[in-house]
Length: 97
Image (tube, rainbow, N blue to C red; front, top):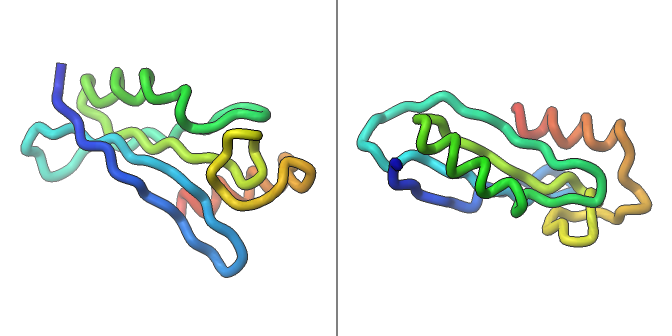
């Protein structure tokens, strides 16, 4: 099993905050492939942590984030009442950028 570093990696736009964490293999290598993990309805990034650890063990970085308004436990800005598939697409595009 590979050691890992976990860092908060938030994305700030003009009107919102996307909260996330990145899991990075602590293996001395300068680069690693990245997997972006998205949660389901009324979810958050935290339940994905075991999957992130598995990815780190396989040599990947893993970024998990909370969709804005994506769930009760979300640390991102926004209300669950304002979240839709379209706002999720906007959030994912912000993450990809």
